[in-house]
Image 1 (cartoon, rainbow, N blue to C red):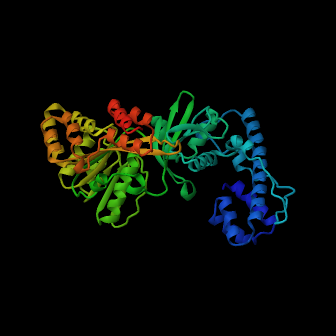
Image 2 (image 1 turned 180 degrees about the vertical axis):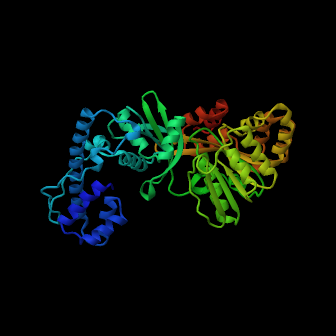
Image 3 (image 1 turned 60 degrees about the vertical axis):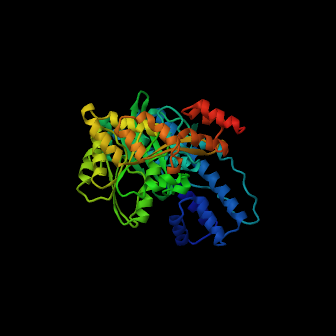
Amino acid sequence: MSKVTQQVFRRIAIHNKLLPEDELDALLSDFSDPLEALKQLVERQVMSQNTASQFEAVFKKQVNKLFAEQIGQMEETLETKPPCDAEQAKPSHAASAPASPIADLPAVSDSGTEEQVNVTRHDRARSLALGGVERIHSLMQQARQLGASDLHVISGIVPVVRVNGLLRELPCERLSADVAKQSLLSVLTEEQKTTFYDKLELDFSYDGGEELGRYRANLLFQHRGVDGVFRLIPETIPSFQDLNLPDAVKRFTEHRVGVVLVTGPKGSGKTTTLAAMVDRINRQRAEHIITLEDPIEFVHPCKRGHVNQRQVGTHTHSFSNALRSALREAPDVIMVGEMRDLETTSLAITAAETGHLVLATLHTPDAVRTIGRILDEFPPKEQPQIRAMLSESLCGICSQLLLPGADGESMALAVEVLVNTQAIGHLIREEKVHQIHGVMETGKQHGMILMDDSLIRLAKAGRITAEVAGEYAHNAKYVKAELASEGV
C-alpha cells in the first residue's frame, strides 16, 4: 500500500486498539497489502473474521474519502496551474500532502454491523489522486490482479491492459498528456531521461519490487504526447510443463553445441520459452551461461550453473559487441535476446561452430521461413559457406503462437518444431529449403510438429475453437477438413 493508505490503515488499527504500535509497525513492514495484513491478524486470532470484514469496510470508506478530497485538490491545481516542463516535473500535491485527518472513526467489533461501502464509484478517479510513481504503481498492480500481459499508459486516453490477447480499459480516468508524461518520466533515472529525449524512445526494464514484480518497458513520443508500454514478467520462471512445451523442445537444452532458435510474432512467448531453457540448463549443468538481452526480463539466480546477464545499452553497446566479447569470456551457453542484424547472426553461428550452445530468437512465423530469413541476410557470395555452417550447427527451431483460448479466459500455445536431421541438413546445403516442410510432415518420430497439426490438436482438445484454428492456419482448408472429419 502507499504511504497515504498505510497511514489510514494504521490510524484505524490504533483507534480500535488492535495491536501495540510497535507490533503494528512490524506487521505493516511485512505485509504491504492491507488485505494480507488483515488476513494475518485473523490467523493470529487478534480479530475474528467478522471484525476483519468490518475493518476492511471502514478502511475502504476512509481511503475513498481521502482520494475524493485529493482529486478535488488535483483538479483545482490542474485548472489553475500551467503544465510544467517534463524536466521540472514534481510529484503532485496529492502525493506529497499528509493524509487528511480522519474524524469520527467508527469502532469495529464482533457485535457491529458490516458497513457497505461503494468502492467502485471512486476507482475511475483514483489514479488522478496519486503522484507520478504511485500512479504507475497503482496501474501496474491492477494489471497484475487482472492477469494482464501488457499495460499501456497512453496520453489523453484511459490506460488499458491486454488480457488474453484483447485490450480492455482499466477503471481509471483518462490521463492528460501532461499527467501521462509526468507519470512515465517519474519511473526513469536521470540517465534514462537523457537517453529518452536524445533518441525519442527508450527500451528498459523496471523492477517494482516483490509487490509489483518486473516489467519490460518501452517509452515513446507520439503526436498526443508520451506513451508507455509495460510487459508484465511472471514472478517465477515457468517450467516446460507450465508452458506445455513438447518434449522435443526440452531435448534442445541437452545439446552442448549448436544453435537453437525460438521464433514467432510479438507477444508469442519467445522470451519466456528462452528463459525456461536457460533455467533448465542452469538447474542441471554446472556451466557458464551468458545472456545478452534488451532489456533483462527474467532474472536468473546462479543454481548449478553460473549466469551472467548483460543488458544492451547498460552493460554493452550492442548485441554484436557483447557476442564478440562473449567468445573470450569462456561461456558454455550464450543466450541472445534477438538476432537483429547480419553481424549478430554471423557471430551467433560462428559461436556455435566454435563449441558453444547458442539460444536466440527471431521474429519469423515458421521454421522454413526462419531458415530462409537467416540465409537471405548474407550476401550471395557468402551464402554457400553459411548454408554449410547452418546445416551442421542448427539443433532445431521452435516457432510459437499464443492464441485466445476457447474459454475466453486463457491463452493456448501452438508450437511448430523442426529438429535438424541429416535430411534437413542436406536440404539446407543444397538450397532446397522449400522442401523442408515435406520432410517435417514425415519426421514425427524425431519430434517434429507442423503448426497446422498443433492447431488441429488444440482444437480437438477443446483448448481453442475451430474458427481460431482456421484463422491462424497456414493451410486453412486442410485444418478445417481435419476438424470437420472429427466433428469439431
